[in-house]
Each structure stands twice: as structure tokens, then as C-alpha cells.
Amino acid sequence: MVVIENDRLEIQINPKGAELTSIFHLQHQLEYMWSGDPAFWAKRSPVLFPIVGTLKDNSYVFNEETYSLNRHGFARDMDFEVELKTSSKAVFLLKSNDATRKLFPFEFEFRISYELRKSVLNVSYEVLNSGDDDLFFSVGGHPAFAVPLAEGTQYNDYYLEFEEVESVDRWPISAEGLIEKNSVPFLDKSNTVVLSRDLFYNDAIVLKNLTSTTVALRSGKTNHGWVFDFADFPYLGIWAAKNADFICIEPWCGIADAIDSNRQLIEKEGIEQLPPNEVFSRTWTLELF
Image 1 (tube, helix red, strand yellow):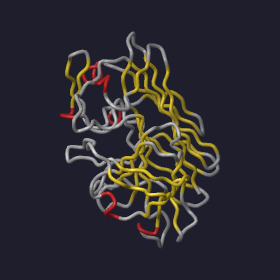
Image 2: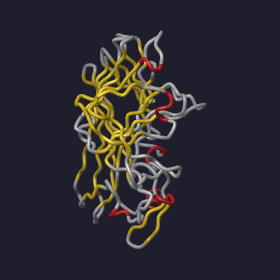
Image 3: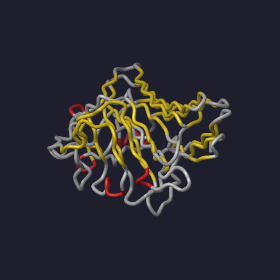
Image 4: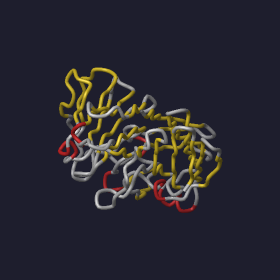
């Protein structure tokens, strides 16, 4: 496990998947991350690359060839190299190799950096196209935060608060993990979502076209929570496993296939196209209180 820290926070990252596993506030003596209890969901913060969500038939077509790729891609299951490590920053690197090329016929260098500044964690995804042709990909985060956060509180004592009043639909997910054709109402001139167990019984809440760029976890029962900045990401997922004590805030550059997808990678909604030798970079931040 790789550990970075400052006088306020201690962060642990597993080089397998470059997965964030712990955010411990030293002053509050409080763990902000989900425990990874396998009875509910064994992961804590998988990184989604080179796709986000599920592909129709778990496959895609590129240059008339069909490739198989499971939900959220392969990066979360691969060993990253620790490229840089200081007391308060760590950078992890995954390069394309024979194993990735069987699933994804592109050359790339994928870097994930974690950096602490006071009570803020910055998480950056950097993709370098190291090949000779355009690179088509998606990338996203999937961190799971402990709820309830403080002793003596319950799940439904907490709410999510967007910084702007929103009128926005959610996009339902089919049993196969694909985006349905029609959206359904979610927020109507509101900026708060009270957490409840049944909120996620029909899978994740998928949002597009939000006005807000931050969402906060708050409660009237505790002063502790966080503010999550997803300004760099056009899609946001919110999810929890059934009856589990966490909430996932998922910033995405990319989205699952629609149920009527033609499976062509270059036509996929949300796909990023990166020319050779170019670098794509996106960052989300988490401020803890």
C-alpha cells in the first residue's frame, strides 16, 4: 500500500488498479472511505478506463473488428507502476501492453495522481496517446464514501447538496447495465437529495447536463462531510450497493452504451478522441470537513 499524508490527512492507495482505499482525517480521527465489506461491495474506488459503464453485449467494434471488454474496462484490475512518490503526492502509471492490446487495440500511457493540499485531495487522470493513430477512450472515477460518517448518525440523516438549483432528469439503467431511451424526472428546481436506502434499488442515478460543478455531503446531525468538485467531467453517477453504508460519487468522461447502441466505438456517446502524442487530463477534488 502506498501512503501519502500531510498534517491533516492520510491517504492509502493500492497499486493494483491505483485504487484509493483510505482517506483518514488525522485531526477528526475519522475515516471517510467505505470499508470494502465484500458482503456488499468489495471495491472502494475503482478507476474506470478505457470505458465507463457497460458495453452492449460486453463488446465493441473498431475498424470492423469486434473486441470484448467488461464493464468499466481493465485498468481497475491491473498493476500500476509507482512512477513518483513524495510525502504528499503519488503518481501511478499503466502502459499499454500485450494483455491490454487484446482487449483494446491502442497504445497509451495512463497516469493517475493523488495529491494532498491542506484538507483537499486532488485526483487527476492523464492519458497520453503513445501510438500513431487516434485513441478512443473513456475515463472516470468511482470513489465510495462512508455513510453514515459520524458516530450516532444514520444513513438517512445525510443529504447531497448541489451548489446550484437544478431541474434535471436521470437516465435509467436497464437490467443489462445499458442506458434506457427515455429519461425520468429527478430534481425539479431543487439542489438537495436526501439519502435513503431505496434510492439506489434500481441501480445508479445517471445525470447529464448539470449546471452544478460541485456536490456536497452534509447532515444536520454532524458538522463533518465533504465537497466533491467534478467540473472537468460531463457526466455524474451516484450509486450505492443495496443497503450498504456508502455513497459513490462517480465523475465520468464517458457513459455506458445505450440500449440501442450500434456498438461502434468511434460513435459511442461520450467517447474521447485523442490525436497521437497528445495528452488528455482531468481532475476531481475532494475537500473534507
